[in-house]
Image (tube, rainbow over all chains, first blue to last red; front, side, top):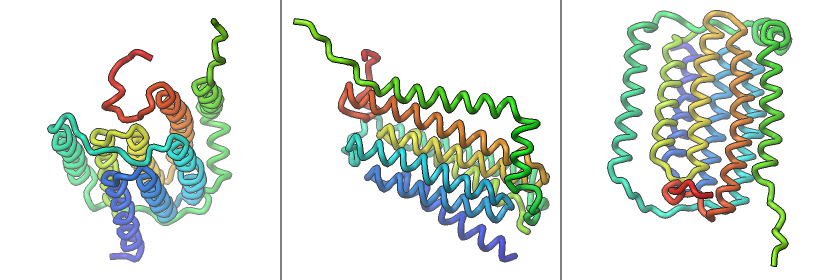
Length: 172
Length: 100
């Protein structure tokens, strides 16, 4: 029971509790805040597993930009609460059964193929610093990098086009 | 340090909870948030194996996943805003017809 395992278990419990809060909260703003807690605790898990750049990128991009965008839209639309009508009664138990099937299958594969043998390795300073990631991004992964820049451009243009208000028709 | 079974099983649990949230919630924005939860679970698996195999490709893939998730959230929320403008609701049970 190494200290890293204890830290990881504490962070994992926080992440799972925040995800449960996201699932069962009736207020949409609370769901967004629970997801921010989840992202931040997973960011610290990245830090334990030797990925400092990704940990801070996760906090800055996911928790800092994407969730803020979610909160903007939630408050813009004013959709904090929903009523409790549920037309299809069998959907919720079926969803829980299917997700439990995914988790059990995953647990079975992990226990038989991976097991408790392989251990994570301590943080390597030269493996995950921004310089190494940058070198890999610009040399071996340069084509996907350019494609992601096009994806971002298309997303920005698409967001503007989709929310454009059409000019009112001037008919009589 | 600690067995990689633990981060991988955490990823599966978070993915399963994302799937449950995707299927049982009625608010379109909360469905989007469960999608982000599933992306996060995949990122945990990438980082775990990048650490185990001491390879930087896992980190690079996490960067790509984050970029794709950001672009998808931008477009998806723009779609939700325009749906709200035309139907005044984002309850997915009310968005039943394809008529714009």
